Image (cartoon, rainbow, N blue to C red; front, side):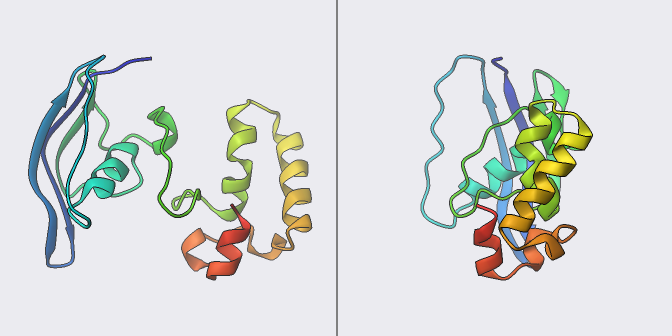
Length: 144
């Protein structure tokens, strides 16, 4: 499904640092768009804001004129390849492992059983309810 993406007056800050000061862009359906800039200028941050993985301090984000600022990431129908980890930071370890199974509309019992087996195999069952940010680097890599 193609969409028009419209961003109006986007702002992103980390502490005192304003990473995205006041960005407005419109990307029309079927249009080729390239996001270029030096390292650290906010390219990935902007993409994470669009996908719903980073908070939006200011501005409005729209898909086909529907405001998505408060829409759950899973409802945005966005694919994103992460620079470092293919881990969803807003989901628990269990939900990260279950993500693909849920998208395939598997029943809850099958998902529960499959995920628990995988967590046991990976020896990370005790971390099932933790958020990825609370894992050591090695444990986080185990989710990949």
